[in-house]
Amino acid sequence: MTLWQTPACLIMMVLLDSINDVWTLAAPGSVTMTSVDRTHTLTWIPPETPCNTTILYSVQFQGEFELMVLNGSWVDSSDCQRVPRTHCDLTFDLGSDSDYNIRVRAQCGSEASAWSKLSPTFNRRHTVLMVPNMKVEAMGTGLQVSFYELPVAAAAKVTVWKKDDKQQLPVFQESVYSVPVQLQVPGLQEGAKYCVMAQVVLIQRVLSSTEAQCVTILAKDAQWKTPTTVTGTVIIMSGLLFVVFWSIVHCQPHHCRAYFTKEPLPQSLHIEDVQIRMRPEETELCDRVHLVPSNKD
View 1 (cartoon, rainbow, N blue to C red):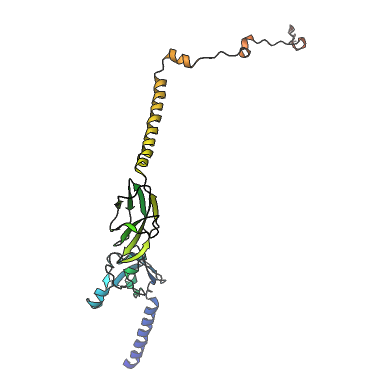
View 2: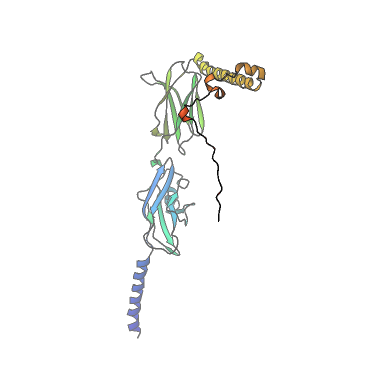
């Protein structure tokens, strides 16, 4: 009896193992990393295995410190543990310039999938930096350069040069590390045109540059002409409007009659003086009619 039952138990165990392999939750697929302006976002595709509840995902990472010092341990992402979304922001988790191993797994109820690893490893140095928005304005005999957005941990190196200079020797250079900021570039030549360009620098590497913006420094006498002309025009128009309004409100009746006289109508428009003559054949004929009542039986 024991010899007969032993092979049967082995067969049942194999069948149970094969059934468990069929219904094991599949791992997430297509794990990719997108890094723009030092913002690192991990994305993946949900598993095709059906699940009666919402599939939850967990993300772990392993940097050089975890690999060498912590004996190859993995660290849970603080914002991506048992989350229903298929993306994870790892900007603040990946805090060094080392190569990171990253993995994600799915969970359906009490059943968890295998880990899906990002391949190849990710280093935040490979981020793509976009060109920042730069505004250049002429302010008197100088320039004002404004920035409102910069990538995280990046700097903008601002260079100013005179446009007519063939060698484009810089007359001003400065690096910007935080925004919003407005750089003042004083002491420029009146009537000359200057160009400004900014380069985004990350760890002493130039990753992107803005297009050159050129402005003309106005002469001192021209600086007050435009605002003075605008101010004078506004004052004159306001005075005219005030005079017209005051005249309408305070106009006396006898004065108003002098300006607003009533013209008499032309003689042809007086209806009482118009007589329409009719021809004899058009005259209405009227006869007196006598009605005789009828006698009823």
